[in-house]
Length: 412
Image (cartoon, rainbow, N blue to C red; front, side, top):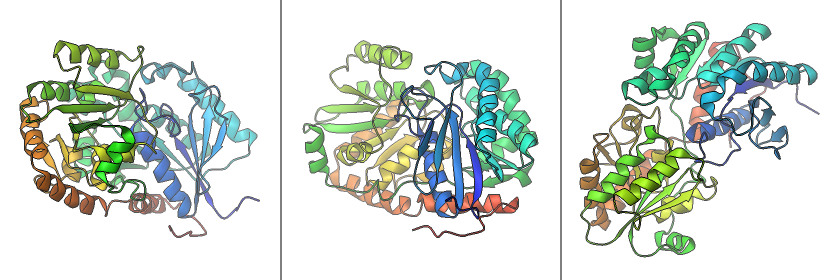
């Protein structure tokens, strides 16, 4: 029988299901964030339902996760529709979500939306249910457009983000920089915004024996650079391809690319073509998307992990690599600056600059003791950033709005 003392929270994450394979077109760090936060809140005594668009015809409508958390799939538009085309399906998603809620006689204490598409739905649901609305944008159109990425989606996205900013009760951001950007670019009320850094699964991502990991993956003795992420221009994989092309290393380099894949993935096709144009196709291996269970072995096997993004609101990949004791070389952008202590737990270099990346990578790849030292510092840094801390921080935001579990369940 259901425990009636638990407060029920509705997470809205329209385009990115936390059960989808990581690194696929629309599935990345946000999917991990949503699931781990929801489960962390469940351990604190909340019950969280994650509403997302159905992405797989064989997936059950309701999937139980850990700690009383559920994923609820809502059919809206073609299963393979990319997020850029989901605006037209928002009314259907909202209508069918409400039908499910009424049929199951569910009552929610609060709505927490993720990303601008979900923010629109969250506004409508919070009004109808008479409950507070908290949102987490994860990325912002105005910042992306200033990085000359995603300009084509500036409208209606930017206008919708402004509407959500004006109407929500609280906005959760990962960094102080994102808070400042919301105030500067969207005229957000500072009193609405709460900074709660994201986290990492410290039990899953931890240091391991590099040789054993390489043996399990069948890797040779080449120096190994690892890229993990969606194949989206904003993630900067092109920068890393050009970096490999200009690197001067004493032994063969291999770049492992985790994410994307398939002939229908246009960025994947473009990157494969670029590898041939740069004559580095023998040094780049495209592995496609992987399950979260597979990722730790790849981090452990790599000599260095790279995060060449043009924009990161947080930087989960960098944190996962650091938790595994793998050195990170990343773009000097605000989300990554928050995580990485330059020259101590990793290196930060100018974004969009292959020569700067090449310089730091060459130094690390020839110096095993330096890699080990930075890896140890990275793990130490990550050790204080578990998901438990994030869940406690977000629960505090809910408490500000009068929403707290009647029965507290301590996080194990």
